[in-house]
Length: 301
Image (cartoon, rainbow, N blue to C red):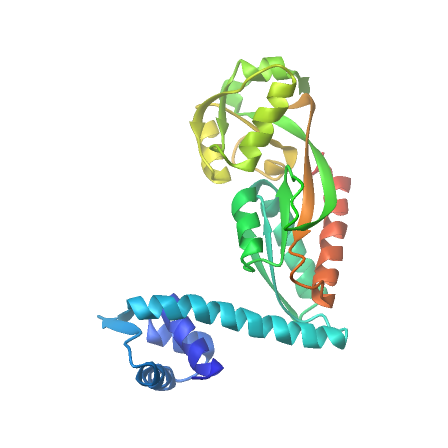
C-alpha cells in the first residue's frame, strides 16, 4: 500500500467514477483501475463495487476512505510544516465561516490570495458555528470565523470584529421602524431564524432575554439562502448582521433597522494541536485586511 494508491482510491470513491477520477488526477483511467485492483488484492477485500458506468463504496471501502482522507491530510500538513521551516507560504488551507459572513468575505479573500500567494490553495466552507467547531476539533478545518464565541479550551481564539444586529424585512412587510428599532418592537414580529440549539439562534435568544423579551419564530432554517427566500415571500423578518444582505440585489432593497443595543462578536479560532504555520499567518493577515476594507466600505456595520 502506498500514498499514490490511496490518492487514486479517494478520488474514485469521492467522484464515484473511474474516468472522472483519472481526469482529476491527470493520469490514464487504466492506471487508476490497476492501482485500485492492486490495493484490493493486498487488503484481500473489495473496496469498490462497479455499478453501470460508476462505482460505489463497499463497507470496507467506506472504512478505508475515512482513514485515507485523514492520512492524506496528515501528509499534506507535514509537507506544509516542512515548507514553513523555509518560511514559504504553501499548501492547502481550510477555512470555515458563518454563511452571513463568509459569502461576502470569502470571494475577496480568495481573489487576494490568488493574486498574491499562488502557492496557497484555499478550501472555503460556510456553515453554522457548532459544525465549524466540530470540524476544527476533528482536524477538518485549519481556521474558522465564528459568531457568538464562548470560552472553549479546545481553541485558540483571536477577536476579529464586532457588528450590529439588524431587523431585516422584505418591502412587503416593511414595519416602518426607521433606521433603528428596539428589541421590544422586534419581539412583536414573526421572525425567521436558525433552529435551536445552533449558536447563532442561542445568541439572539440570549440577547433578547437580557432585554426582558422573547423572540417569536414562525419558521426555522439553518440555511441563509432559504431564510432569505422565505422573507422574500413575506413569511417573516430576519435578525442578522448587516453584512448578510449588504450585497443583495435580488429585491429592490431590504428594509433594515439596527436593533438598539445588540451586537455580535466574531473570532478567528484554531486548534492548539495544529501549529500556526507561515501559510496560516499569511492568510490570517489577509482576513484581517479584508475585514478592515469591508468595514471601510460600510458592508460591515
